[in-house]
Image 1: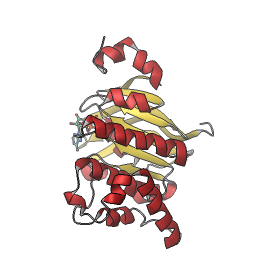
Image 2 (image 1 turned 30 degrees about the vertical axis):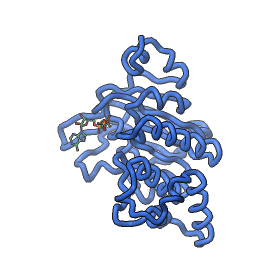
Image 3 (image 1 turned 90 degrees about the horizontal axis):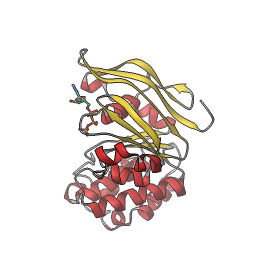
Image 4 (image 1 turned 180 degrees about the vertical axis):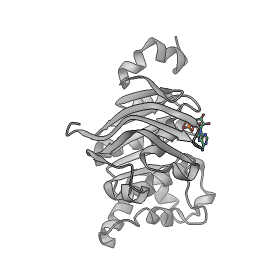
Length: 248
Ligand code: ATP
């Protein structure tokens, strides 16, 4: 790996319930400072790939049976999700997963639990999150369960930011959101990438929006990477246009 590489997934295979082969040799690289998109239709294996990286497959009876996953050149397959957070990698799961009975601000503060620095640094980061997500500042006293889907997605990303991550694994941020909100969230992701230097690996079915904001993309089909390349090249590729962008 080069110095630029943060995450390197090399030829991983994932099997659920000992028999269902879902990933059939997936390789990908996440460079420092990049937004990398993992694309593909329903069931292609995007979520499974993210969960394999953050070691979240056990509870679903899934396991990585082949290949390797390295972060900064170090094997991370034996690490728990919270050890990975310490290393700077955090996953924002599909479906938002805010604590519904806590306020937005309380949710954000739960993201700082791994932090060993003082509360003034944590407070400063809370302000940083509010600066990126003004809607969260407005809604900070609201119970998360009563906020909109878009606000809950923002809350989930904001909470992840509170751990001061180097890399965020973001699963399907556009899911169930109106186009204008999708645009708003992707714009914030881009700002976080450019201004805070956070690297992203984002899984998306919405190829169109993902390729407008990402630098590089991988397309998964039935557990295999069938194509990869710089985002602007993928957007011009005739097959991508026909099968994923809805134009030919
Ligand atoms: P989606 O957009 O629906 O999340 P995806 O690309 O993220 O799609 P995965 O969720 O990774 O796809 O699923 C890939 C395949 O693995 C699907 O065929 C799915 O049915 C199967 N699968 C996912 N979780 C399990 C599980 N716990 N047990 C068995 N099969 C599973």
